[in-house]
Length: 108
Length: 168
Image (cartoon, rainbow over all chains, first blue to last red; front, side, top):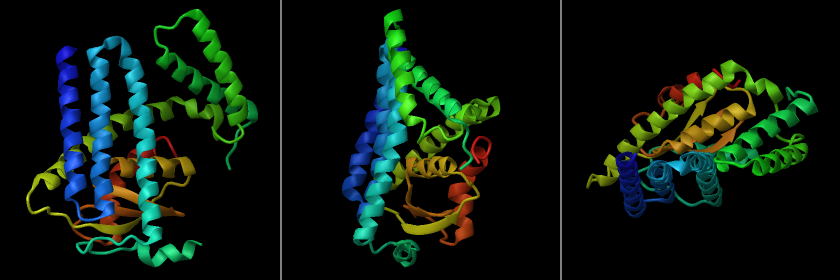
């Protein structure tokens, strides 16, 4: 139990760090959102589950908390990306194609 | 809307809320249990009108089995994609090739589309920007081809065939 918990927390901290690094290195908002989903999925998820393994009486509660994070995190990412695109925040020069651009106006 | 009657919808909400309550207060005392059940019954009286579209039929064994199979699949996809994005972030040349591509889904129900969109966004490297009818606009951090067929095969396909077991 103890070893599993330590391993899970180490994985979580590693991926949170990589998410933060990606946030600095990526060229535009959309790619930054991509790397920040990494911090929320494996980062927060395995840290919380790892705490549950360290203290087994909390395990069920931590699984419920992790499930709520997994259900709600993508909605905020999606809304940030959609609002930014509608507001006209440009994509980076490396972007090869933007198929949303031509259809975005039709919806209104 | 393929709606079931009010009682069945209320009962579904009641069961789900009660199970959540039991999970949260796990070594529970009897007084906590009764309070939780009463509050769960009370809350689902109000939410039944808007949520729990399919009522008790959501508890069909085939649907629960489908969901239980889906959870390890999505966790595995998340781990794989996490490692891929970690390699991109760590490599000095930053080998990204972003694009917003379209992909059409075969799923019909709102809840099915919601599951698929959340699965895509949870996987690092792909992000659902918008859904218009059955067309998904997906931002990818690195994609080789931008035509629709490739996008359907590489992004949507791996989730859709498992989702179709328990949502329409």
